[in-house]
Image 1 (cartoon, rainbow, N blue to C red):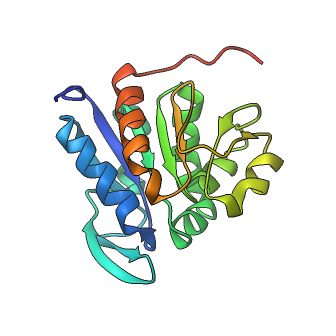
Image 2: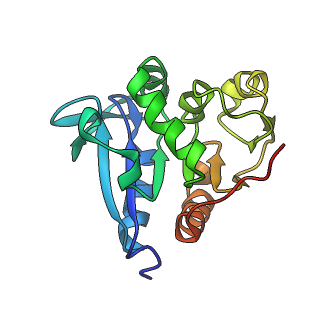
Length: 186
């Protein structure tokens, strides 16, 4: 299955990402033929959180300051509690994600990952899901929140938790294969 053989995907992450929420989608993207770069404000490696303890280290392919959103066809934002909280305070992370939203390029965000997207200020009217603890944050950002294993809104794919990974990965690959989504005017 090489549906993404001509696609270049960015994974934006920090230390403290939920291990399975980066590794499982990354493996699915590789299996679909995508070129995948882990992008981070951190040099070298970033460390995973694995349920209730520190997990593996993942190699950073490109420093955020050297990454250009225009070079990528899609963006994956893994969750975890620490990862999105760190990124939402980093203006470069926010601007990187915002560039995808504004251009109509597909984004996949799981669990707490949508916290970063809240900071972009451009979620008004979008249909999304997330880990339940950030439901109110998303609603306050203007999102139509629903409790579903995966929600797709014009190329924006969101899921609640690692248990939703099979549905999340399938929809992520589908939306990344479709490419840019032009959002109708509100």
